Length: 501
Ligand SMILES: *[C@@H]1O[C@H](CO)[C@@H](O)[C@H](O)[C@H]1NC(C)=O
Ligand SMILES: *[C@@H]1O[C@H](CO)[C@@H](O)[C@H](O)[C@H]1NC(C)=O
Ligand SMILES: *[C@@H]1O[C@H](CO)[C@@H](O)[C@H](O)[C@H]1NC(C)=O
Ligand SMILES: [Zn+2]
Image (cartoon, rainbow, N blue to C red; front, side, top):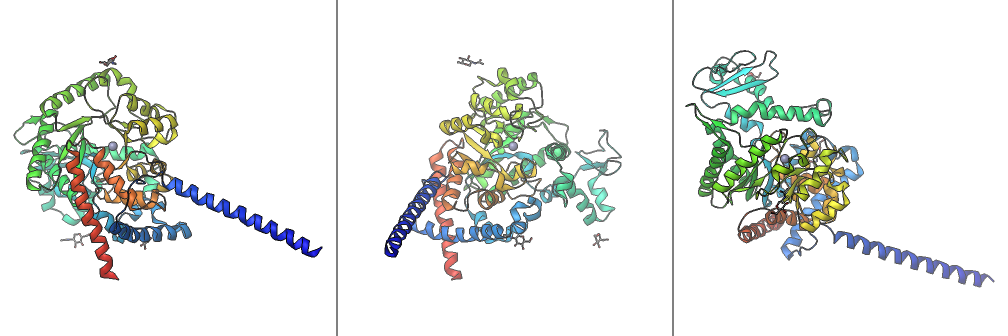
């Protein structure tokens, strides 16, 4: 009797453990399968890459696992302004900084360099400024004589102001006008529209400072320099192509501005032959009427005719929730022979006109989509984008600072990465939020968004994606050079480990 009971129990236990084992095996198979759906799954790592990967993944897991146990101390779930400087000291950040990151495919020209750089520009000769009554804002103008333009108080030469005041204090005050970074962003930047108001003022305020021709050329040249230092090889830069001016009273048209960009690019490539240069995406403001868009397209065509190799294409920019829906401009922007690189779905308002711009962008044949933050809510479009290989230019930190999402762990990029969507990482406007060209965005995406399992394969694929989805004409050269730099990068990580062991 007893032996029978024991016999039965044993059998039941064995059968149970068999079931457990089967489930466990199936679990592993499923996890494996899912990992093989991620961005980077098709990359095979070499022996050195595997070693480098171990080093990188130890650093990544250390940060994530610490956060998992102590969520209140997880830096990336705080505001970007709180951790942006601290993370620069981490080994992982330094590795990502030295990593070849390919191309920057989504950046707006006058918002790439930070406030310290912009402050430096206010030391140029012939700069005049005028503060508002309550010093809540400041205007700039380059001129030989006192500007006649209306202003809040009175125009003074920057040089004269500095001669008669404490320069350190003055510069601290002035620098605040070139950055969104403040101590209490959660209190001041309460919602999307409020933060965009501050953001828009940055562009309005700096306009007459940057559009002075010598400054314009210098800013762009130094942007290319900063890209190169951040291990970026090439950029497709978006510009509203504002008219420029100089001290002699000359003004320059949008077409002239495009020509200047081309000249400076050529000069830069001569000075730094290891840089692969730039192309231009003409991206004027979208909060305008149809006649204005028609005129934009005319300008774009003219630039295209003059510089077919330099102009990558056309886009419209500005806060999407406030701008006109793309569909209003169908007659102006279809059949133009221009390539489109549309911003679309930079919103968290599901089912609204800005959300539905995603449909228009795809139907209009956009080559890439700027942001595509809302795409995750559109299953059909997700399939279409993958089928047509329309790259998503994802800018995580921009979406955090501009209040689409507060915590990178909730960013839709996680979904795009998990199913190998054609993603490229970029930084949109790193200057006003004081991020480094691309490194901060790679860091936040790698540690704060991607799976704990996502590794060097993903990083490499993201960099490669930025080359494949660029409009650079000789992509094989670009990719070839990338591979050489990548091998050097891997060697430097592996060697570094030998030093420390
Ligand atoms: C996170 O922030 C704390 C201070 O709040 C700092 O000591 C720590 O080094 C940071 N960790 C990382 C990985 O940046
Ligand atoms: C200017 O102001 C700074 C900061 O308030 C102070 O440390 C410095 O001594 C001042 N310099 C002069 C020359 O007064
Ligand atoms: C664009 O051109 C194609 C073929 O050239 C034509 O079939 C189509 O109707 C045109 N669309 C518009 C909106 O003009
Ligand atoms: Zn943008």
